[in-house]
Length: 239
Image 1: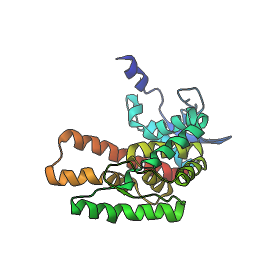
Image 2: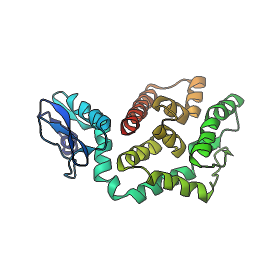
Image 3: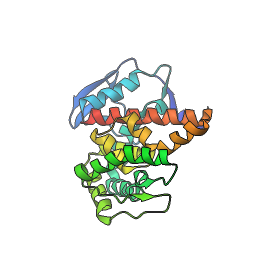
């Protein structure tokens, strides 16, 4: 086993994963003892539902603890060990995503793809403007379209309103979907995980309809879809 494998897989050492209310939230406990994050902090979540989600991942491990298959636990580790220390930088990164948001780049052809993008992306952009105060300039093609500075500042401010756990999920969603708008829509419950993922790949899906999809790309898309669905559960558990 390589050093990297050893960091990702350790033998299961407990029988029961459950939760316990503690100062500051709800802790995950393994046979009555609290596991710690990679940085040595207690694994404490802000809501019962979020702690249940993480505890279920630990309980679901078999012979080995596979952290790669424990997305809620990874989000919790990120929130506790990193995001709480770099909140401003994380929010600024989300604002940079907003500056080149996927949903603002509409195709010019073929007509069927253009119609699909306007029909499916348009309402989400309208929601972002009406409900979040995020006004985006909609461009065509791949030429860079600058967004209003006020929009980027607003996106950053909205991100900073979130707690560390929500912000960790939002940052992951922005990177996964290539869109701050879709990330916020997922975090706020405007979109489900699968719907947000499908909206992030309208162009790719259209091309697949025309030319087919190879097995490697299909597997990658399936894994990304599962990540988006998990993020939907993560955000719901934090509400």
